[in-house]
Length: 445
View 1 (cartoon, one colour):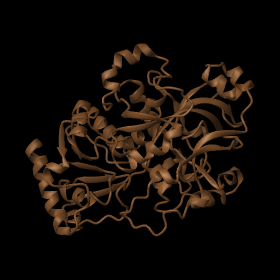
View 2: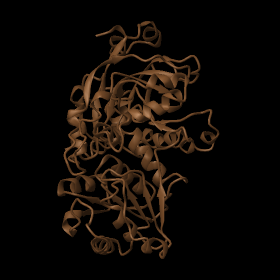
View 3: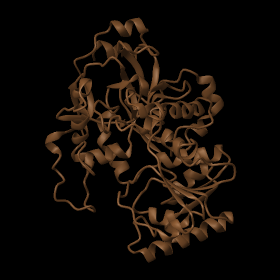
């Protein structure tokens, strides 16, 4: 074990961290450019097993730009963008790194024959660039995936509107599924003191994305009493949406694919839980427009039977398999808000039900830094809790990603990086006790 890692794990002072030399390489989950064609010739329905492409091994330590920090990553988590990356879909991410490098300067570091993945992270700052003012070695932080260019004018209106905005660890190199990571200072927020490393690392991408979609004025902000249909409600993103709808005074309506996930969702406090198998939705997109409408009618009847109304908002990150149903089932004047397409990017829907009923489709992507801090404040106050369900060691990251690829998970799947065991990192045990282990562990089991 190198001296810097030893210092981090022993809880060394800022001065001791600064004195320990940075290692020349570090352990990381990554892809290799020579593997990008391994799934060529396979069809959409074929099994592009991410365990074949995801590697864990040593990579060189990158240089630090003036506006960056080096973070010792205690824990990270799996997001679907890691699955896309490892399947090389819709395109190999090495193209992202090439285009980023072409912008010049320190960006040139990112174009490498390997890509370190991971868009979540919690850890300890061990170095700061010369231009960093608000952070110092020893700070406990979480890392937002929103990687923005502060010299771009649009960024100052909304960080997510800049043309050079990227997702860290997906469209950039040196991501969070590693022992160390490089992040811009503008990605950082304080780690909630009552959370473990792995709990804190399960928040940043999914929770802040749900916050922008449902609470921020830039998404579809809900109001007291709104009914919100949430696809994949027991997943990492969906379970945060359930909590936010409840906290805002709305009525979450969760759709899941098994009784086990339904039970976990009820434990989380979801008002209405619908098992899609019980109303004949299955797990695939309807084959024809007529089948889509029929499926939407079945879902609509189930929602009205439970609530007496149609939903004001549909929260859809599932994509192709659900989008046609979403646009049909949302009420007149309602909105479908979408941030992803885990079942496919090419969506089909009957536009008559959209325009003639004055419905809206709202695209949303990650969150800006202000939204991230506002969202994390709710975790720090115990209003929201992590949706972590399980965790794997970094060496088994491919198995963790495979679980998400097959949709056999609930909540967030964490990855222990430098943290030697789960449960570490809590610096406010008193507040943790007040929040309660039952709430914090709602999706485990």
